[in-house]
Image (cartoon, rainbow, N blue to C red; front, side):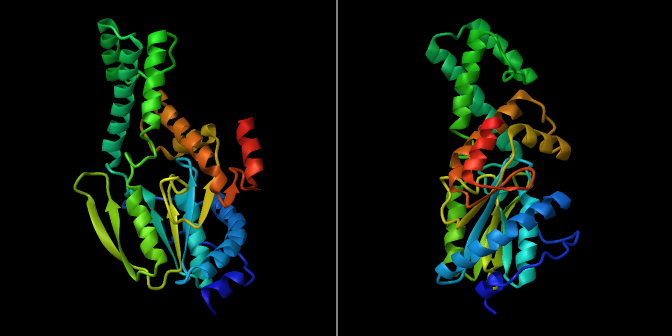
Length: 309
């Protein structure tokens, strides 16, 4: 049977072992739970149909799926389960982690985000004519305490925060932060039949950077698990899948996973809110949307849900 015929055949969910292949981010630790298995089982039947059509349209019988959503929503886990189901059908799948493609390691990117916010805020104060030496001293104290994004009543501090947020919005999820061209190039090579492709690996230190040459000769579906998998800057994705969560749900996920030692900071909350708004602006392109509760949503239903929250 061809990959298309396998996808068109009836499907019965198989048991998912505890240890299955997952994304290629070095050191990434994922924990697949019943919630991820259940959501993947809801997504897989319509995804199977969409993939059969996408493979039929590609001369090399290849297709690209992106699993996107907010931080901590379960992208890595659900992408892993979807790939497991595809491989179990005999449809080769590989999971690429988009987190290998920022321009800076996580620590340095966190610092750059902070620098962008603070520089933008200062520039906004200067441009508005509100800056004084006294304010500069207060800001330096706030920077040391990392409280310059905390809720503020003072007009000058609110002006600083507004300008800083605008600067941060222009950085997050853009080519300034991430090498979208490299990922788009990988997608293009995959879809035009490349048998091997060198893929980037990025750790958490500046010297943890290398490429592995990956054999794609038996792979029909490339699954990209990535917050930015539905971005305007990314080209070539056939089926974007959006895992939806509200900002409050995203923050709760991150707390549970303890991914960030400063998880409760106002700055982190701002980053998550900007990220969420960008995901919302891109959602109309998603071919499949699933709620936090595991229900498939139309785009109209998604809009209503987000408006309520």
